[in-house]
Image (tube, rainbow, N blue to C red; front, top):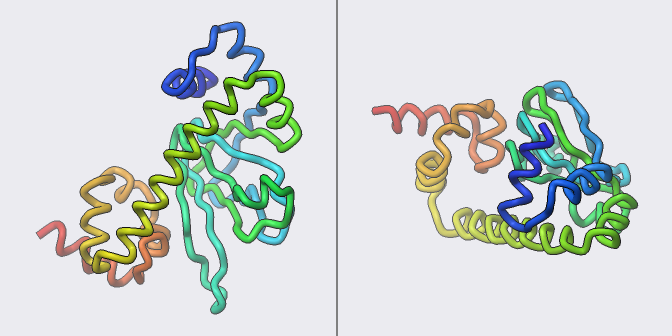
Length: 191
């Protein structure tokens, strides 16, 4: 499984086999079951998560007590409550496994030590955060400039496997749709 992380790192930075083995020591591999919660809203955010296999989601509870999915993480994606992790404060979000998953995790102190010992990892995380922020900006643009229907079809065309993989009610939540309307749009897409 560590090979997945190594290949991902190599897309952004160069590290030798020896350096990679040393870097890997800052992380722990954990296995989580479907629906297991890794981060609870209101608890200190102590970890960043890198998905080796499976799928995670970040969500919040709105004023009506309804879960709103704000982010997904598939294989080779990172997920955390970044603000709460950086400041070591209470999280405004929860993170849950959508599928049985295998994850690399790193805590705040280990990450700070990793940066000090391997400055190249700060460069790696800068690239990761830049791409994540760019994706977030595009999502906001689509939310505010496209109709719900156009947004769904655009998302479906970009990520057809993802649309089939994630439970419909979670996808609807992420796209700002009701599950019923998502069903209607999926039927329309098939015809």
